[in-house]
Length: 315
Image (cartoon, rainbow, N blue to C red; front, side, top):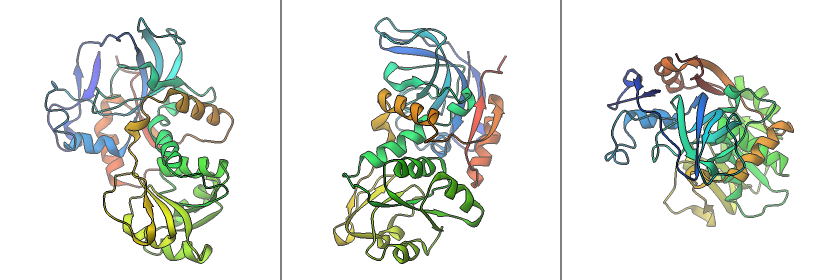
């Protein structure tokens, strides 16, 4: 089979097509014929060598990618509920396993959910990792019935899913946006949209003088958002956090790897897409052998929705 990966770390140019053996599923796994694999910022860090130590005992080529959608091609002996030909989406725990940039991938059955019926396989590829990140971000908070939640990076994939889930679950949502993204973020369901940037906290306080109950910091603004949070409120960073916080604010750092085997949560996300609560956004579909171009575009920033690599068209 063909795989897009790297034998050395560096810029987008290190991504190349490689021919590798097709993997076989273990007893609790399924093999998926990949139609689409989404490109995430995490994949750029993978390519640049951020996970070098994790990969040190593995044999290259190394494939990035945490999101895939396709059809089940083989089922492990202990797996029930799945059949060859089923349309599925999966979250891939790269770099702990080989990533989604491949014609075939093997993943635990617990990492798989049905594709939403209303989405193509390319569209579904943009869902798992970012939607599960949003789900985990909200699950990390205490029950804040009808609470106030501010979201940074709301126009991005994880931030956008967070806005939609939070609004669906009864939060009053304040989200940030650049001028060109205001209408997009409003369409996601935010109650209030404030400018993205240095004045975020002041703009939030103008709306909620006592400060919001929580901030989900998808834009990684870190300390700049603290003034927006009420005393004793909650801060959810998506890139980890180990420092103390002012005014009794509680940090809830998350890593999506905690939810890579939460198939019921991913299944519920699929249902929410089919019911119209959540929307998948893709910016473009590129042939798999143009992964380097996708990485260049994502690295430049400003991409709204995910770029998806098309593996179904590989010959």
